[in-house]
Length: 127
Ligand code: HEC
Ligand code: HEC
Ligand code: HEC
Ligand code: HEC
Image (tube, rainbow, N blue to C red; front, top):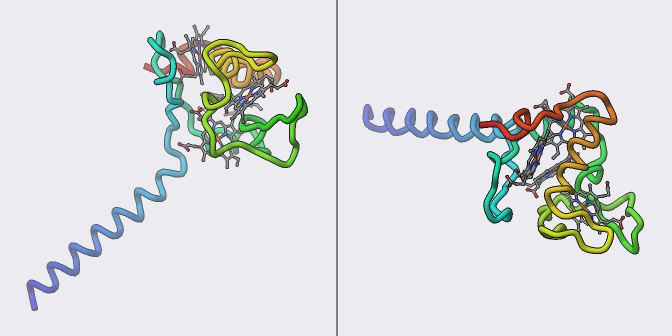
């Protein structure tokens, strides 16, 4: 009986740990993968994906995860199931900016436009 109790409380602790970690993942830091850059010069950029978008009052996923067709942005579609690097190469092609530039135009561009959000290197590329 005593043994059973120990097993049960262990199971309870484990399941609450799993629950807690699933929850805290919501505002976990997203490290933007920089593996595709052959010799990354900076620490990978990091931001709290969901929290960031909430604070910046961004409602549409496709402000960042966009899909274009024949040069036109598809308003109702988004590409959050794809990495930016699946479409943007290390070099620019046609009117698609190269990967590094794509990130910088997207991230820094909006921060500059809004006068809010970091534009200093170390604020995104955190050590
Ligand atoms: C608003 C956020 C932001 C700021 C500010 C920013 N970057 Fe980036 N940068 C990114 C993101 C996101 C990537 C994509 C890859 C990654 O995680 O590093 C990137 C990629 C890069 C890359 C290509 C990957 C590498 O490490 O070689 C370089 C180089 C780079 N940034 C340099 C800079 C420099 C220099 C500055 C300051 C003048 C700067 N960045 C400011 C977000 C930012
Ligand atoms: C401010 C820009 C931005 C907005 C807005 C945005 N995302 Fe993202 N998201 C990113 C970046 C950058 C990555 C990393 C992509 C990469 O490494 O190529 C990412 C990654 C993801 C990933 C995959 C990986 C992971 O580790 O979480 C999912 C899923 C995702 N976003 C879903 C969404 C959804 C759903 C929305 C809208 C509710 C959204 N995103 C809005 C920038 C954004
Ligand atoms: C499904 C493919 C695809 C994915 C995924 C994708 N892009 Fe793009 N992106 C394009 C195409 C195509 C263009 C060229 C648009 C045009 O014709 O003007 C573009 C243009 C851009 C531009 C320049 C125009 C603008 O919107 O300011 C930026 C910046 C950019 N992408 C950043 C990103 C970032 C950051 C990510 C990841 C969060 C990303 N892209 C994911 C296909 C993609
Ligand atoms: C559409 C506009 C927009 C885009 C795109 C955008 N940001 Fe921001 N970002 C903001 C605003 C607005 C703030 C300031 C909001 C606040 O936290 O008070 C901000 C704040 C931040 C901060 C500081 C606060 C925090 O959440 O840590 C970081 C880091 C950051 N952005 C990184 C990024 C990166 C990396 C990208 C590109 C992958 C990106 N941002 C794209 C609008 C944007």
